[in-house]
Amino acid sequence: MFVSVFAGLTSSFQMVQINRENLRAGQILLEKMELIRLYNWNQITGADSTTFVPATFSGAYYPDGSTGGVLYSGTVTIANAPLTETYASDLRVVTISLNWTSGNVPHTRSMTTYVSKYGLQNYLY
Image (cartoon, rainbow, N blue to C red; front, side, top):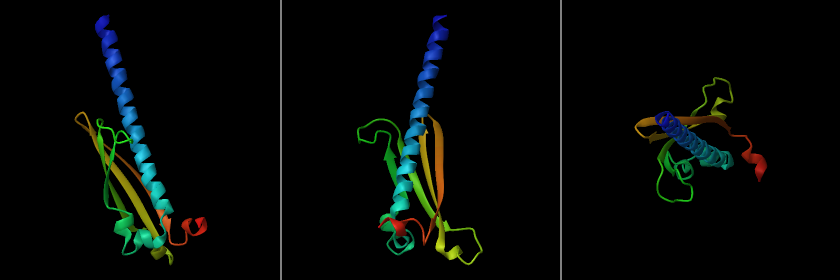
């Protein structure tokens, strides 16, 4: 009976850790998406876009910078929108992907959004 209780507790702690890692991955993805939302069209697509939107980034499990936990590595891809209409040149698809390894199991999450030349950023300031 003790072995069964111990196995149940161990499994519960592993599931909690996996859920915490998934939650932190979602926080990192949302943080990067919010940054994209605040940039204007030239900062996303212009010559200085690599300064504002780096192609790769990394994030820590602990956001305060303390050591331990997994290390998340991410990529940002900005591509033309898959449209053929006349406004297709004024629209981009931004995909942010995040990868990490917990134990020996690789995990991945991603978010995708569209950015318009005449979008939300024109109304903020």
